[in-house]
Length: 584
Image (cartoon, rainbow, N blue to C red; front, top):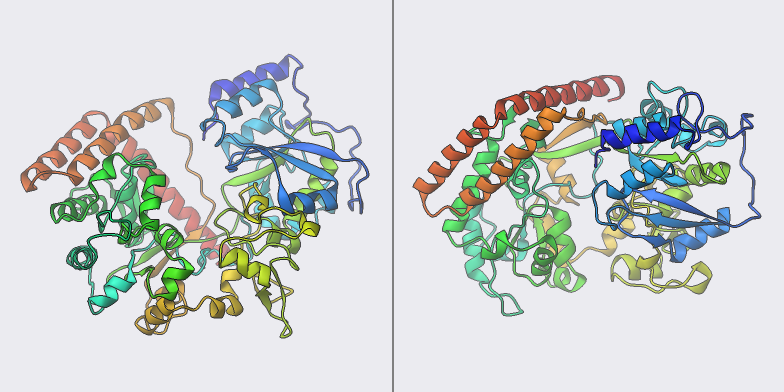
């Protein structure tokens, strides 16, 4: 989501008219500028704050156990304002910016967006409260990075970490990877798969082994969807990550900076994937509903056992690897492609792309600053987290230290994280555990960071007690055929098949109006033809469509946009190299 410049100018115009509060440097003035060295132990007056959260997938008052923790500690309620729920895009953001009040607590993008909020006087300088923020100040390099070029502390980083930027930031599984139904792969005798293309005959045999799902519907090796298409066909980008590439505009850039490819390179990785899809469809392996279904429909097909291959662990495994299935030996595990070199995001030395700020019109900025600082604490890190961040929850409720001094899930924690359900005791707020999870949907400290008190990561999935608890027939069989690896990450590291892109917090500059116009025209053509090529009738039509795509894109100014993306991709790599030298 990019702030429209005309709205930024509107905010500045309002500022000039005296409708927005401001001070030197853009933040609001709170009158008393005396530094706060510590926060109060308690807060007598209850307040409700508006949290404008660009990452939230829930709108309304925070409920359940997380709400109770915040209420008990800060006598504060959180009213979540979520643009994702209010129609998406920047409409809600722009409307509130123009009105001069985005929110009391703001979670938004750093870079241009934060800069415009500072310039427009919609966020406060937190310098007054920063001396009391003992938890966030542990990550000073990230704080300095976010506020570089500003005359105060206007934004605080997310996903900070003490892990080196040259080490993976991901959990037991990488973000990307070729995952297949291991139980059917086992029935075939664990055939060797040398390349992506060698997957096709294996997937064909797997589909022949189980042509019909338990619900009576036809099974397909591959099922696609269009929801996330952008500069390219999203599904076609995914296999390129198995070889160390990630996208930046119309460029595929390798994690180590050794290669940069145009996605329209006839011999490049993107075209390789389109050819892979085409051949798979010719073999009857692609779900014919791929062109019309959305992600939710696709997810339900995975749940029902109608799809055999997953681009990501968090799709196939989360949908199908239930306790019942894995105990019976069924489920998705990574396929051992002999030539893969899986892309992995390094721990970001300067935090993630989002930042936290306090709105210029916040009623009690000191209390909000105290709440933010708590989110960086050990207790806050366990209690808060993104929806996919494996936050362990509050100590004493979902986990505790065992007699051996090591962290382990409580009986209630086992219900929540293994069985997927659990009613919270009344003293913790009551209700369903899932309904009470923090709706902020962002980790302030990376869950993979190690808690100094326990000596183990905050992410409970790394705990030996959890891994022992979740050992199943599926995991045991997979491990025995994958060098006795304890996890996917363990296997990839043992076999030198993980390519980590150092975490540099790089953000590409905003496109000029000319480039943005050209990009929008070109990407529509690329997506349209990518789908056509995937479902081409024969080799001749595939080749013809590829030629047409390249010709049309070039005619629309593809080379001009590609140059911008190539420059940005190389700048991104320079930032990665620099941070690796400095902190790696």
